[in-house]
Image (cartoon, rainbow, N blue to C red):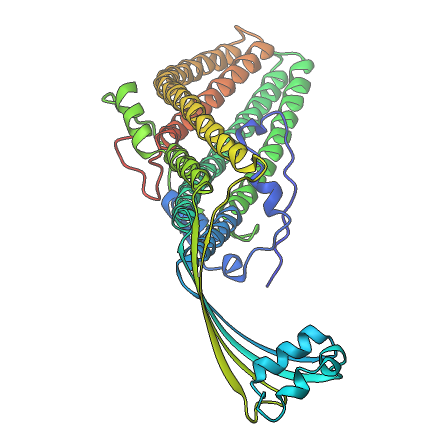
Length: 472
């Protein structure tokens, strides 16, 4: 196993685009498997990133391990239906009168010749050291346990199904985290490209101010200011490159790959909108597919079986058993054999109100699950409405931001021409340049949010899979 060290991601004034979720904290303490560190990845689409995360993500591996445990617990509950078979080998060396006489009877060594000696007070009071080797073959089969075995198995099965739904929910959350990290890398790369263009423009403005100064059209402070603005742009470019690298590291961590894995992202930030979406249809999908809601319904059913199980404690139990014995004074040279077949009917008449309180507790748990279901339904309805309205709003914001970029770009062109003609100041030119940069950043952020909204809608409706459907 090769350890893949994870760098701590720092946050600056622009790093709000990088969502540092708790998954990174856990993964930094865990080594990435050799397969996850392997090179050879070329193009990485969003679907391919999803597939890698389903294979290498440590949170999902932990969830799968817990699901395996639940499977073994189900098998344990199923074992209650089968008979219990045991074999015991016991050696006894005693001078206890009761045990000694019992060993003699089990060995069946009484004869007409020695019966008087074994029943004499001398032997009964002082039997001396008596040896006995006993082999016991035992079978026990529950016939009726008040529903405990059957209901216990059903509850274990429901618990495993609930954990399976929980794992499905975790998968969807991981995929959404991967989508955020994936498109954060693309956003950071676009910001690097933007800052490169800002540096190029700032350098052109510096050269322009120097030419105008040499021509006697501007003062020396313009040249100095242009140099300062160029230095600022270069500094922001360096910061953008740093954030871009960190965003790639974080994407690798979120997927579960080697932190230094290199590949090209092939998916893009593309604006899209589906007018046919409605809150009602999305809510129906959520209640039909949300794994956490399905898991809660399974837990509710589990609590209902718990009430039946608690009632079963007031019922009698019936158990059948069979024992086959072999006893001898030596290690089985001439053993005597015997058997015992038993059927035990057990009534629990009074348990100090323990069973009664257990029943009431089971009913309270069931009522609690009913309340949780109502709360979760309200939460899902609110999440769906939020996702829908956010999707609509961000689509509008993206179009507005796109127009703002076109306007800012044209304003910058006009202002630059006016500065060349001596009709405005350098301060005003850089102010316009900052406005253009801010408009461009707003557009990129809006495009990023709109892209993620599609995945968030899939998440809140429980439909986020490896291949997102195109209708969103």
